[in-house]
Length: 102
Image 1 (tube, rainbow, N blue to C red):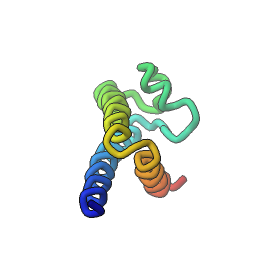
Image 2 (image 1 turned 90 degrees about the vertical axis):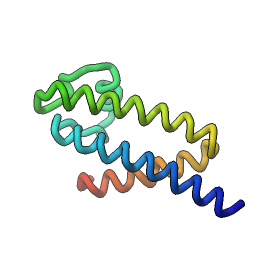
Image 3 (image 1 turned 60 degrees about the vertical axis):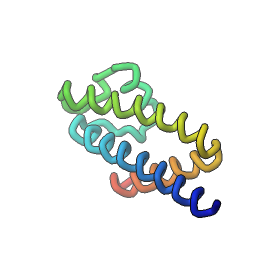
Image 4 (image 1 turned 90 degrees about the horizontal axis):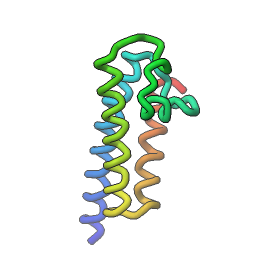
């Protein structure tokens, strides 16, 4: 059973990491710091004025990926439980902060 749990954790972590990497790419193109308070909500609310550079296509992709991230997170909570999902998300946010130099 430990192997199944470990595999499941790794599978979810990989999925989150891939989505987060794409979000970071589009955030960079749009020049928006998603780690600043309120910026993720502004993107989810379709507020492109949060961006430092206008790129409608990149903004739409970033917004869709953020919505996908929340959807995947809900599924992960159902599969892994809230504690393990939070641990995965926290690890990814830490890597994202390191990647962005924050």
